[in-house]
Length: 465
Image (tube, rainbow, N blue to C red):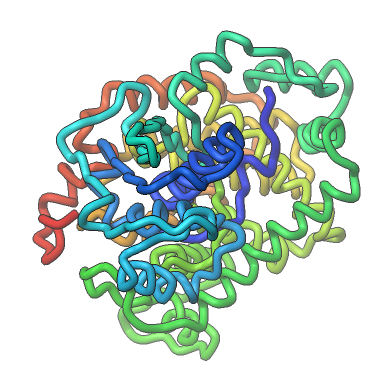
């Protein structure tokens, strides 16, 4: 499998990996690809961006319009300043022009140059984009890209070409299924995190790997911390109030009212996850894990491990957690999907729950069999979960789903650790079930806001989204 831990965990901004991060990357790549071929952008006189399917239907709520414009400006998800986004966009709209990749100025307004195709989809994925360049000689350059979940993008035809080429990954422990990974572990008497570490070190040094893993955890940790002290109202028109900070303050003060249950370390995890996803909904800095819509689950369970499980070597445990989580995410992405627009929220919150459960078991020294069992439990109890965001916003039910998913991950890890590693349903079986369930799911339940909660709750901005 030619995928890295850093493919699954990307540092970026909210509110969506497939609708914000992916389109920003695609827009920038489009211009970079053309500039590489033409030598410059000097002959460009205009640009258009066309959004299709789920990107068009929920794009306003998911900030796809903003992401595309930022990408055309040359911004990247990992480097863009979240606090400066609105001013940058407002200035461009006021001027009526964009500086493509920060250099070439062309006329641009959202009304004229950003086109929403809500009734159409492109053939390879529900999240399709078509970019058009107008050149000085009157000709056009058009290219199509797809945002396929978790911030991954492909150009038209690229995914199929990659499948047909499909070279074996040049790593010591290649795997395409959990069965193959378990067999590698038995043959070489190695744990899953040890094998993932060896695979990563075929690409980069051990020191670079650890620095990258530590950076991911630091961003996750900082996101939780910021979310636990930030109050106010989330943007988008639903007038959703942040709750994590208030609930966390009550928790720290030890104040319980008659209608509140006592909280313990496990229950606090839900607040960690909600804090992250409130940050995500506000367009803050998050780590895609494996998506933005499910970004709170892994950080929440990681903090629970680091602070409440009393590890003897927390740094090593955190690194093993992330490596093992990545292995589960790789399998889900390769053999099913992590795109809500393709497979529903089972591929986002369900996969993140499985990743966190497996990571926790690995960090606590569980066997490979127990790691698989925890991941299988995590997905199994999210099968069929739809993606039906109200108003096209990554807020309701997304934020609470992360809180619940984090608790489920700890429960799954606990059940697996108490067993002997044997279980009836394999992870490969449940991933294939998830894939088939997603294929059978009606499109209106897959990140279109045309079904489920999205149409049963009246919102002021539903028609616009």
